[in-house]
Image (tube, rainbow, N blue to C red; front, side, top):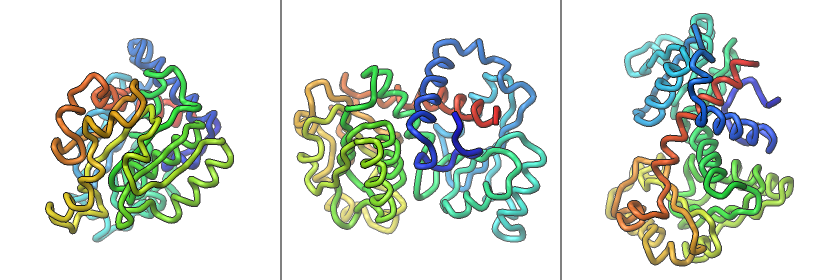
Length: 309
């Protein structure tokens, strides 16, 4: 992989780069003992501005399983952004540790951290993107279908959000078709549309934005949903969210519009009865917990690739 020093956005990586990460992650998953000392005496700093379950558990477990160490650091307990700039924090922290992963609201702040860091920085989630999640999702799809190119993924729900944006970048880079469905109030950000159009032309994947969920999932191999409680919807009450997004709920009837072999994905946590029904979540088509597991293996692969640089 000859991509950037940091892992901030999937749009920074080529099809070959992502394919190598997927290959590495699958190899790590198949033979984890082979990598038991791969990060020996290495320290990962995990910076969290927002709460985390899967991200923290997978990164911390991954470093432990590879013989390294992880430090969890909450910005709520620090001087970061109060007495100290993000740049000074990053310059200092990168002299102590070997690699940093940060879960910050602001993507600009993450980029400032990376610009002055002397060690690799991984995006563990910002308002704009969630590249570690989507890299592991692509790994999961590869495992299930034995390919990525030519498959179609449909995302339904709030498209003014990090998950659909990173899905657009990741799927199109890997030659997949992606169709997203959302109300106008929660449309794909303009800059993400622009990048999606460019990636579509470069890698020949079809990119569509729909208003009708049924249109989006037609002929889909994968149907993907995310929570309705995103950064965009944070100020809206439950009644308004239901009005906006219930037409995009993934239920049995919507899944029937996709291919008969279609699989259901969700990055979790899921609000059952809202964006997805129990009937779909607990069905044989659901691979949400395979996704969750693969966060561990993919994040090991990302860490090891960046440490090699």
